[in-house]
Image (cartoon, rainbow, N blue to C red; front, side, top):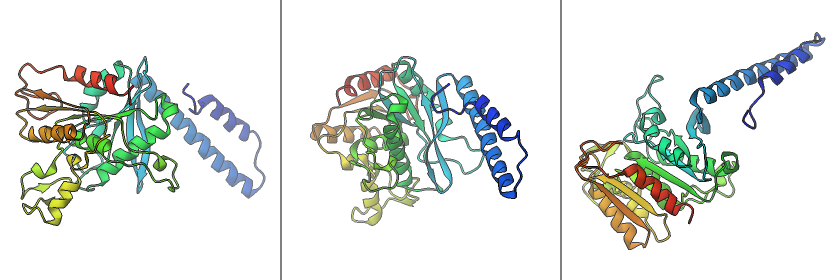
Length: 329
């Protein structure tokens, strides 16, 4: 049984012992009802977690890493059989959007997670596949704030996850690659006076892998409503709208000392242009940051690079990048 998990048999024993004597006063009866409710809930949750852990093997589903106005932020944790002590936060691509509805598929269940998380876990990494708030209900910087919260949560509970808090990587594709890149280039050290100890942790990661990431949002065609913001980018570079696009672009924030970054991009991508990878590579090289651009010939936009001609081993390249740089950071 995992440390900290409520023991079902212990809960039942407590319930029986509490119920062996008839409560005499009204106050005692109310207290008894409260204790029974707590025990019943604990038994239910213990069964749910145990069943999930048993059914999913080494994957723990729906770990709550934060709350926003009653909305739970969830992650799936992939535990490796032979852990190397390093953690990777994985962010699925979604165009920053999600359907509105109770039956909408969660971001982390889009299918992208297993494509990358399973081989990473097989290589020894503990992987945290996360949900985040999404457009159109939420707008930037909500998506980023949730990704940062995930890193802080993982870092704060690193010992429980069996990882090094000072060596955490981030990986994502498309909009997830945009957020993963921001986790690398933004110097968010946490709020030292925050009431929550989690929020006092740094949200900066030490290594980044970004697939088909929109690193320069000003490359988006003007006049189109951008899902991240809910408004159009103006062609006028002095406009407030244009400056919002600039501020939300990872390439804007590149500085010396940023984490090594592997960029993987299809050169036939008609959703996020290959130019995004080129400008990010140039900015990182200028700042003296280790960077590699893995071009996928003929590939369009998508987690498996559709249309690729003789595609490179991008999964192997991703693992090799983390293997090379995470231990050294």
